[in-house]
Length: 377
Image (tube, rainbow, N blue to C red; front, top):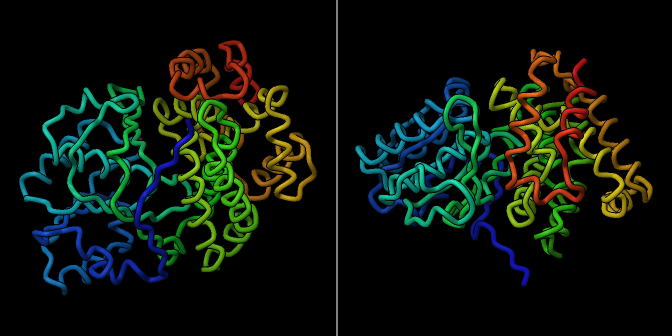
């Protein structure tokens, strides 16, 4: 049996964050909104219009801006504790993937008695949760429409919570929030979204016709926009296409999960705090080359859809050309990861069985080591 789930209410409006009071109607009965974000988003003023709109409409707001990249359990637990103390009626995740993932788990923790330690894995988190709305400020993670949250456990280990209770009640895509993104962030998060779509299309156990269609639609939007927004960050139409593309990719991989690119990327983030999108960009080409003997047909279908020519090599070459064009770092050395860390990272990557089982070619420790060695720099 194949099935497909996603967020029931997705809204697209340029400038919509400044009318957030209209977009949360019906979600917050007690008019107390708990906003989960990070210091960067808050400090840049991206929340200002939304806060003003909520206050003008008579809502009480509490801003929790302690989220960091690869959010640790301590921050998530602190946010949940504060949400309960203020009597939150709605959790509003506002930011990139880390704030949105954190908001999802806070909504669960504040809405139920389930311990965080029991939520990790697939369908282990059962809810109930508080009402949840998500507003992305980057075009990459697709977290706003997925049932996944990734947290850092212990010092470096990253674990995922995958459960339908994590699907938000409502999502708002406001392209104006993304116009100030730096070029590197725009590039890395855009490549991240393209990886989501490619891995969903080749995710053999749960690949399905709906996720396939969404993945191809996402790649069409992203392919035609990523270089444009890197060249002109104020191109609002291209920015909106990136947001929509990232959302479509999120819907695809939420149903046909990611694979070895993500598995090999996680140690870069968990151990060395390399941003997630950049981690994916670093290992993407090596993993795709490794997958080619088994994935050539599927990669070729994507390439044909994108009018690149119908072989897997065409797709791999195109993704490499995008990396070159947008200027993302391409070696471990360029992100301060020493070659001596390769063995440790490879061992860590091989523990990501939740992801590795979806890969079109079985990933081995030796292959993982070689992929890292080839980008050592």
